[in-house]
Image (cartoon, rainbow, N blue to C red; front, side, top):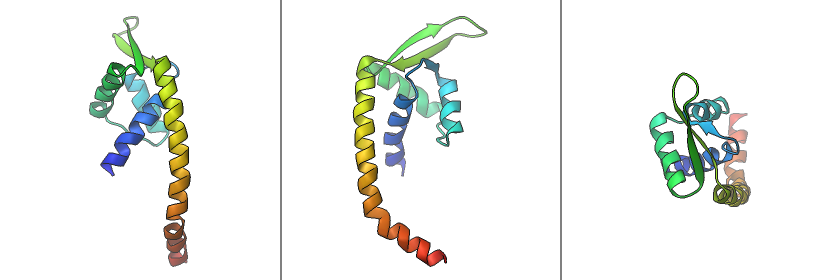
Length: 110
């Protein structure tokens, strides 16, 4: 489950950064949509994605405390489109593979 979740977190994070966001707001946004992520997981992920050239960041010192805002780079947008296509393809395959299991579980619950 942990390995599956790691891959999903990359895709989920990239999908939310078409506009610049800081880490805590991203944690709240993902959590509100049902995907909980810890600070200790998100911040290293953001730094790694930035090192890979998929995100850009800048500090905003306006307000009560400085915040680092992240957004997709051009390369990040390209990778997001590619990963999203692969995700949809895999979901279709997995739905077909798991259909007998899901149907069996529904039949047993009645």
